[in-house]
Each structure stands twice: as structure tokens, then as C-alpha cells.
Image (cartoon, rainbow over all chains, first blue to last red; front, side, top):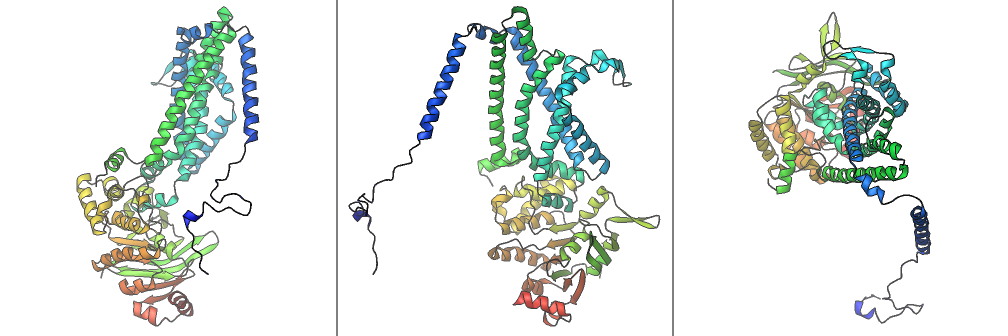
Length: 301
Length: 254
């Protein structure tokens, strides 16, 4: 017998449980969500009450947030973050390429660098650079630089070297994973048309590694915003040092630290937003040249 | 007739495995040589030694009378520096099984890349030539498309155009249709067929026996790193001498 289904007859029928066939099934009940929600609200309320009854002078916080001392600290933190990341990315890329090189000496140097600078805590490296004048009082690089080590090794330079050189070790691993993500066929195609190793790396491999490198680099950038606070150990004027400078004179320790916290959160939020934009940009067209993208968008042929 | 490629007693090892066992082959200018053989017979490896994508362990390979990849010095052969090998490869085109188009560049940029950046030619001129080549392979409508938006057959035709843009004297094809869906094979073969008609010297590693019969001047069958059968398509395909060649042909023609 042939079955003919008609939609209009469906509504009137009930199944063997007595429920109309066209009744929409109800979703699951999420009891756990309600319990978790109540617990979270309660916890936040408790913390809020505790802090509200504490002796923090909340009205002071906005005043410190825009104080010129903290603003200088924000500028210092941004300057140091930017400088260390530039050093880290440039040096890290060179080390990554060295580690992929056919030259065994370069490979060993690259591997040794990563081992050394990733193995020593950044704070220790920072202090080592800052105190290097104890063992090398004079630096003589001939025409490049010659003078007292203390004059060269300012807090900024010590922080830049301490943080930047160890950052390079991490960036090297990130860039290397990007290089490894590019299929070997790309290299063979480049070589078969007569490209040398350097050009193959520059024009074929690295551009295609960038979409893989960008997300973890954004992460490193945000980490570095916070790691620069280590520079307070060599009294570089970053956000934390400036905060410390204020509260050692007026003892409003928590108020000032919370104001610095506000700035760290603001900076990280801004960086996260920028990172999301950049990722979207590269996801849209991989790393296609701007010229090609313009044509793609116009739809011109 | 000018000899384009001359391979003499080429041996190659991958670790302990002896993949090329004393191969010798002459390819003349304008000749189309198709290499058949089971996978693992060394045919792709041999092709890749011709432009030094693979080193060799003994023997000699000459392309246009120039020793490929090595130079004689102090009574020994020494591998050439990267930049010298690059020079040798400039006029040897190669087409790969998996196309290997540059994924970050458009179709037109892929074709323009080599002549502009390797040969240092003028971009405007090269673009004209590239557009003509892409028109010829039927892809004039896709100049600014990204490779990954094209079908396999289209990508392979771009790859051929990319090689041709370098004005090669010799073209190497490494299983150019093996990664393609069956309905896309014909469009790629027809491009290669046109090249054969125009007198391009080609060495083609392929599994397409019917196609090899049609375009090849010479067919080789390889097994375990040696050439077990060579001759005109009729000789090799219709009356193979070697038992393994018969077995291979029976398996692919059934």
C-alpha cells in the first residue's frame, strides 16, 4: 500500500501518548544554570560589601587614575612594551629562520639562544643587565660606542634588554611554528622557479606564516604590557614604579595600586580589541597583498 | 638532434633504500618522454633530480649540456652553491601533483612572480605575457582570484601557466593529474597536449596510459629504480618485453 503524507491532516492527530503530533517538544530544564547564577550573584555581593565597608577611600581612586604621575607611568609602560616587542619580534624572527637554516652552526646558535633566554627568569635577566657595570665598568665598541657602562645601561636599556631578549626566545618559537605551518610544496614551487633560499623565505614562506603568527603574538603583546611591571626592580618609570613612588610618600597604598590596576585593565582591553581587528583582517584574505585585496573587493577582473 | 637532458648512470639512496639504480636517459629537444611505473618505482625521484630538487649519489645529469647541481673541482664533484643551482633551474619548468600555487597571491600574481622577481623583468611586460598565457589555458576570467577558490583542474592550469611564464626550455611534470577529480583530468591534459604540439621538450611522470600513448615520443616504464622498458608508445605499450612491464600494464589497463 502506498502511504501518502499530507501536512494538513497532521495537526488533528495525536500519537499513542495522547500528545498532538504537531506539539513542539520543550527544551531541557537547566536547573544547574539557576543554581550557579544565584551562587555567583551572592559571591559578588559579598565581595562588594566587604570592599565597600573596608577603609579604601574610593573617591581618591579617580583622582589618582588621571594624576600626572600615573599618566607618565602609562606612557613609560607603553614605551617599554612597544620597544621590547619590536626587539622580540625582529630578533625572534631571525632566530626562527636560523633554526630552520641548513647551516648546522646557525641552527645550534638558534637553539642555544632559545634554551638560555627562555630558561632564565626575566626578572633575573633584568637585574643582570642593570648590574653589569659591576663587572664591565667600561664599554668600548670602537666607533659605535665607548664610555661608562653606567651611562649606557639606563633603567630603560636594562629593562629593554632583560625583557626583549627573553621575549625574542618566545617569539622565535612562535615564528618557527608559523614557518612549519607552510606546506613544503610551497618551498619546492619557489625553488623550481629559481628562487634562492632567502627570497623563498621572504616572498613565499613568511607571508604565509603571518596568519599563524599573529594570534600568539597578540597574546605576547598583552603579556608584555604586564611583564613590564618587572621593570620597577630597576626603577624604570613604568606604571607600577610610578604608583609605588606615590604611595611611598602618602601611604594610600591600596588606592594607588587600584588606580594602576584600572590602567592595566584599560590597556589590555584596548590591545585585545586591536588584536581582534588584526586577526579578522588576516583571516579575511590570509596575507594577500593589499593590491590584490583591493581588486578582489571591487570585483574587477 | 640536440640533447636536452642527458642522465648518465644516476644512483640515489634515501637512507638505506636504493631508489635510483644507475638510470641513463637522453631526452632530445622537442621530445616528449612519459615515464610510467608503479608507485615507489623511483619515477618522481628521478624527475626531481633533473632540476636538483633531489641530490644524487653518483652519475651525472646534464641539461642543455650543463652539469646539474654540481661542479667538478680538484678531481671531485662538489655541490653548487644555492644561487648557482637557482640559475640552473630558471629555465626548467616544473609542475607538481598538488599544484603548489602560492596561496597568498592571486592567479595573476602567481604567474608574474617568477619573471619579475627571479628574472628581474619589467612587471608591465610580464603582466601582458601572463594574461596571454592565462587566456590560453582558459583562465582569463580568474586573474584576481585566489588559488584556493579554484577547482583542482583550474589550479593545475594556472601552475602550468606559471611555469611557462619563465619561458622554460624544458618542462617537468610530476603526476600532474593524479590529485584531480576524474572529470577535471581532461582539461589539464589538453593543455599539456597543446604544449607537445608546439614542440616543448617535456618529461612527464604520469599514470594516464592512454594520454601517454597519444602525446609521447618515447615511453619509459620504471621498476625498482631502473628503466625496464623504453621505446615508442607502440613498442612499449603493445609489445612489452619485460615481465614486470607486462604485469604493470595489465594492472593499469584492465
